[in-house]
Image 1 (spheres, helix red, strand yellow):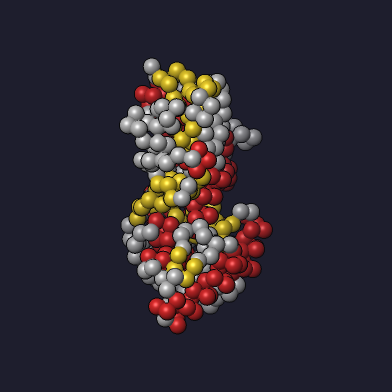
Image 2: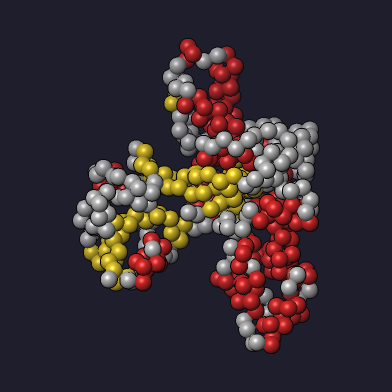
Length: 395
């Protein structure tokens, strides 16, 4: 399952975001290092299910379908807060950097209101610049990678030169435990001076900074978007870093709890809610709901939690959804389940790529593929499109 790490300094709302995204219960408290171990839980990205277009009833196996919207699972890891100097062991240090190893992307939660200092301690609202938090986190993770590479740098150089090996492959072997692939390294070194043996510390760090952005891209989530100073800070974050998602994780949690109690009708991603039991709401509950509607939903269009998940998968990681079936005529698997699975695959994937993602044996036995909508065979070089329903024919 695709893994995404929820990162950031302490006390910015990482666990609240994690809980809101996964409907989980990681401990939430207003002090640093509440998260002692990396929490893992399943969240979902959303996509239009073909069932409504085809006017059929689906029977999902690996996902859910709610009113024509497919909920596709991804794994979130709630990583404890990082502080400046974490790569040197400060705070909870390298233990939590290690928790980032298998993540394909980072959701970096920042306190958009500027009410927590660089260590995660509460401070006067607006007194801390959240742009500094983005820079420090990137630096800490780059320096973590530098520590892994630098300790054997001279040996790696000698091995590459004496055995006439491609140094990119030598680096890939050294960084294999971080989840970084050879393809990422080859991409990152394009246009760089390849005289690796002449690289100084700053050259290695510059390379790793570029590599990290390719191998483990980061989405900035501006949490506490409803608080004073947040709107201006979000604008500044967008100016410097581009895509930023305004979020109120606390609002999402409040709406979810009210919905579970039957007080309102609401689901993740909605731009508003409907009050179902007005007479049962207390004055503080009415005030809170009114505040959320005005300062979150009407201002930003949603709480931002689902938008952040979808953006991380579909835009940051450039993924799409395909629906594999075995019987293209019935749109089913061998057990008769209609549109049984929703598979996240990289954009640009070909049918054989899809076959390998389903199972190695299917990839190795691949013969051709069929577009289930038209029941026509597709070329081996066909680029699968988002929402395609594909049947893989193998030996």
